[in-house]
Image 1: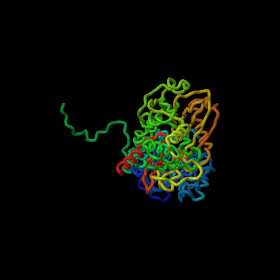
Image 2 (image 1 turned 60 degrees about the vertical axis):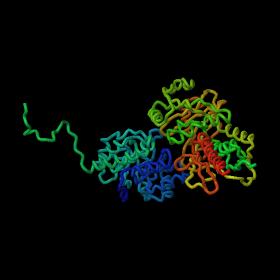
Image 3 (image 1 turned 30 degrees about the vertical axis):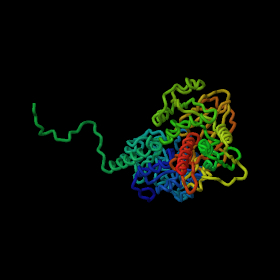
Image 4 (image 1 turned 135 degrees about the vertical axis):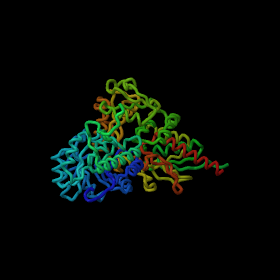
Length: 252
Length: 320
């Protein structure tokens, strides 16, 4: 549930870097994703044809501010997104470093405050820092998007313990693992840890068969969620026999 | 005696000129009309790589197969088709990109970049060599194809008052045909032209990068074309500063000497593309459209032109 909108699929899909819009469309269908993200910064107002293709998918669109390096850029891009897509949803990215694409936490909080006060439903892309999360929630965010690892790196959940404590600290906030997911097993692991959803792009878009990979991720996310709800067994240090030892026949 | 069939080709980009060539070579009477007196549009800014196997990284098998005829088709008609292959390299930290590229393509073998391009010595430990690929200079090629058509008796109307069309109209106008072809969109591409006498390359070199992949195509006489961005927008107009930065930093990563090169030209073109990014022939009303060449103009125009001409001439012979 994001800002009051219930969703059945817990996979969110990015729309960049696909071989073609046609394959992107098939991948979205195969993944079952109900929310897709799209960037605007570079394409600008001239990207109408591509946006039209995205609208035709019938999915809910979460515009993002990818490529923005300052509060002002991000806020302006959010305004433009609201106009172009007629939505108050915005995935807020304020990049702190052009090479690592690591988010700038200070600018992120400032931009989130502005956008929340303007009535946006903000999905901030953040590191897993607890205090940062607190500030963003204070600013009005009801969804947080901690990274698994740097964008496009495919490293999976780089700091699982940090993510676990983030989950534990914010039980009432929707937490979406965003970025760094390279394999369906990593997405499943995030869901098993109790995250609400996973957002990814490169791992599907750049797969040899994006449609097949999209399906794999859709199933992994569903499986991970199901496992979380069903209650995972705890790890143990030693074997635990599933049949009682007493009464076993002694054949020596 | 019946006159040979008459065709009017609209658009003198690579698609139009190839279609006109394939038709006139089969004995047709051909008129080519373009509103611009000089070559322009996406073809003018193209890379001119005949690289079906490299393109297979993202393009479907149909493009890889059809693109393989391009090299011999061009070599038989225009000068300057260089069959030196393609070299693909990646900076040390982006080695996984090279492995991914190798997995996604065929027709390559591992190669020592320095053995192929001595000026890259010491810069890249490994590379991929696509020996069966080629490249040409798109601008010289467009001019050569125009001259050849004229010599073969085609009627060329470039600029000035457009004459009324005669015979079957084949529309190769790229994005100018957008209103007639719903679903055709623009994918912007930006490029640079550098001049350096400090380094020489014999073949196009592709530099892989997770975000800004780029290629450098030698054009001879110290000229290097650096391309190209892929932006989902129909915004025309000059190259953006960001594109210049990305392309130049990629060129710099390939060889620092390129930072000392003269930046002699920047350009931006709009590639016409269908939703599947596959070039296509479409029959619609009384017109035939050859469009959606995307980033495969010089690679795919020959195959499309031959396919279309073959079909049209089969129809003619059936009708007679």
